[in-house]
Image (cartoon, rainbow, N blue to C red; front, top):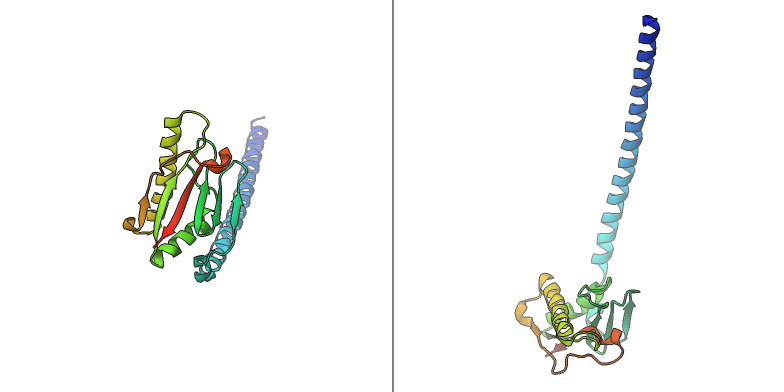
Length: 179
């Protein structure tokens, strides 16, 4: 009976070895596919962004609106860039890159960015005012992080920090380009 047991042991070992080898081959193939997809998307995305003409970002002739379901959005109207925020959040909306590019291009052409934060009228006024300041600082920090000189960005507290319009419109940071 011992010979039968040894044969069964060897068969189990060979079966486990073959299954392990098959699993490694499958994982290797999946890894190669994921690796090539990641590298195929990377190089094609970068030239497309680099190929966009920078001069079109400097001219603001129409209203651009990006609305995100949670309340964060961006709107460019008449040379003023408005960053709208979700309730109790200081996070910029996805898609803010185009609006930030408008501001950066304006600064590069000799303007100065004046940033003001506003809040809605719900909740505690002191907390809302601190959040409006934090939102304005977030926009300033992103701009300086993108290479805008700090002396070209001016943070100004508005006389009245409670924004106009409905609550979603009131929770905003305005960036004006001045000469």
